[in-house]
Image (cartoon, rainbow, N blue to C red):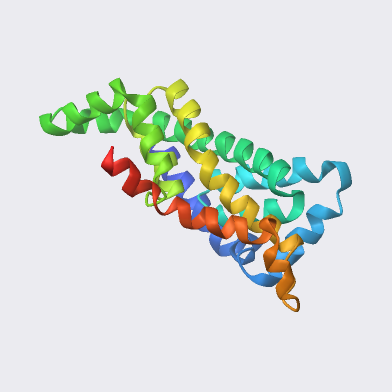
Length: 218
């Protein structure tokens, strides 16, 4: 009963954040510009503030791709990737722990009635690292859904964190670099598109869409 109450409170908190706080506006162009201005003005504390915002957004299931691009725009491709990936991994780990504590017991009771699903859960737990890595590498699976969904399985926390960190790296770098390209591109100069820092990220994003086909062949 206690866990059910916590689950309801958590869902209500997410709804309240979307409904009654400025978080609902951060996806807009004006919202992102304001957020960028606030973070940039913090000097040496800017990475820490951005990381806290990213972790908070991940835990409360706010869209993270926009923040990943913003991280590239603020900190560049390399530092931005390090900050984005670390923040995403920490946030995803919190989601996993919340889901594991609140929902795993209920799932175990449900699986006892469904032997076929119980077998699948056993296999996922046995091959936890590769299961999570596979799911993270394929961009078709929603980031937030995996954060909470994998907590309901038998995957160990260690396998989840390590595989998530590695599996999220390619996509994180691609979208961070896409944001960093905004520092170099000029809409009034076609020559800027000859810079690898501009066209490279777009090529990486396209390559990401090919990962599911490569994995399927293997």
